[in-house]
Length: 75
Image 1 (cartoon, rainbow, N blue to C red):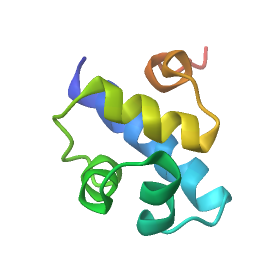
Image 2 (cartoon, helix red, strand yellow):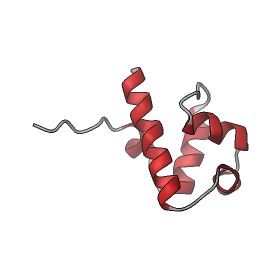
Image 3 (tube, one colour):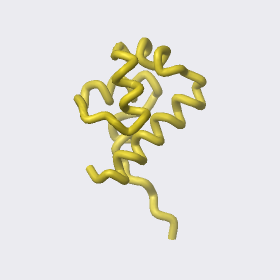
Image 4 (tube, rainbow, N blue to C red):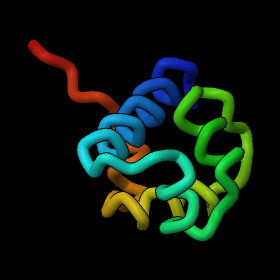
């Protein structure tokens, strides 16, 4: 995954988190992961387990496919 794709994924997570008005702590609790992991993901510093991303995605209503689908190019 390129840096641009990772940044896009992290932006998507941040956007959905903001739309749901969840703090990092609230998202972490909903996902069953640590607040530090959520903070690292939303700040583009995550280099951890896929299972953690799956839990965060599930808590936000996003599938792994949605998290990893590439940005659509505008023609």
